Amino acid sequence: MLQNKINPSNTKVKITKNMLVTRVLDRLNSKEKKKAFAKNQVETFMEALLKEISLSLAKKIEKIQLLGFASFETIKTKERPAVNPQTKEKIIIPSKFVPKVSFSDVLRGKVDTGEDLLDNDNSDEESDSGYDSDEESDEDQEW
Image (cartoon, rainbow, N blue to C red; front, side, top):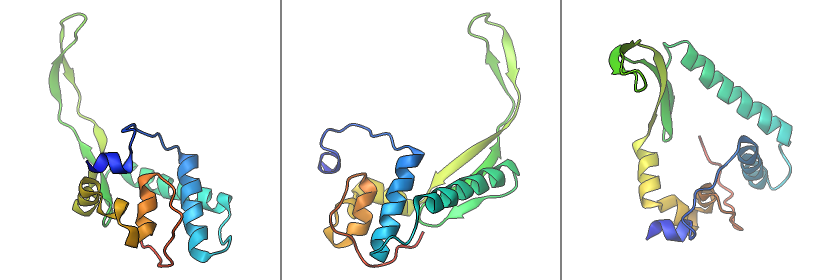
């Protein structure tokens, strides 16, 4: 089974923001074959990116599309009836805005098949599995 080749113990690994910054830093610096970026530069970039996505969603009128990855938008839920489980009282849950993430078909296909995760010719994508790779590609990766 594909899952066992990627993650033999079949356990989930929690990736923190700091770990993600370190991985991005390693990827960027390995591309340049030198220390082209400092950790604080990558942290600043990632914070700015996440803040911009959050602010765009808070405006409730913008949709962010990262082609080949996902789209982010805000949707308004409808008002709906419910029952308080403790008092059995009927209540109305008001409508509200919630964030919505839709993953691209490209990403879904890669996750389903594991094509880039196990492909040795594309070792740059292999590191996305969460496991270190000794080989790195010299090609630039686009977001």
